[in-house]
Amino acid sequence: MSLPHAILTALLEKPSSGLELTRRFDRSIGYFWQATHQQIYRELGRLEEAGQIRALQSGQPARGQKKEYEVLPAGRAELAAWVGRTEDPKPVRDALLLRMRAAAVVGTEGLEAELRRHLELHERQLAEYLAIEERHFPPGRDSVEDRLRHVVLRGGIDLERFWIQWLAHALEELGRPAAEVSG
Image (cartoon, rainbow, N blue to C red; front, side, top):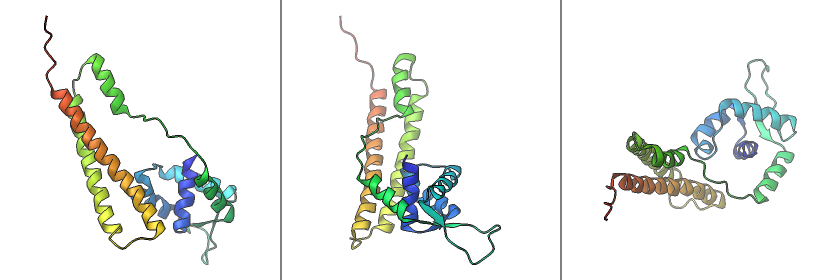
């Protein structure tokens, strides 16, 4: 249900064409809400049919012209209502955690390399988030909108730090020799 809300948010920030929207997803919202380009275009059509967005009029012929969309009052109202709703946290669903549990019963062949690969990926993502923070949130950017966007980014930074710490611990546990059984 959140993809339409992510699109409404992005369009309220800046009216965009479908292509511009997919690029913006790749650079920002996509860090915490994934969607393929096809999903975004399909959802744009649904939002338009529902009267929540509309394509802006273009002064040029429509054939081959990209549509730029804006949010209508019904879309803004839907987004505001969604922001105020309650929603329980979703349980963690991560294949790596399941694979580690499976390794406990079938053996750990290849697990260490995969843990190290994940550690490297999370370290790279953390570096990217920190660069975004430095670039987009210098001291003095203190509007409510900037603070909220920064809090979202800080959530990503904190999650990456969690995964890095957790993976380091998992690798440490995997490398520890089994305790000797005394008899």
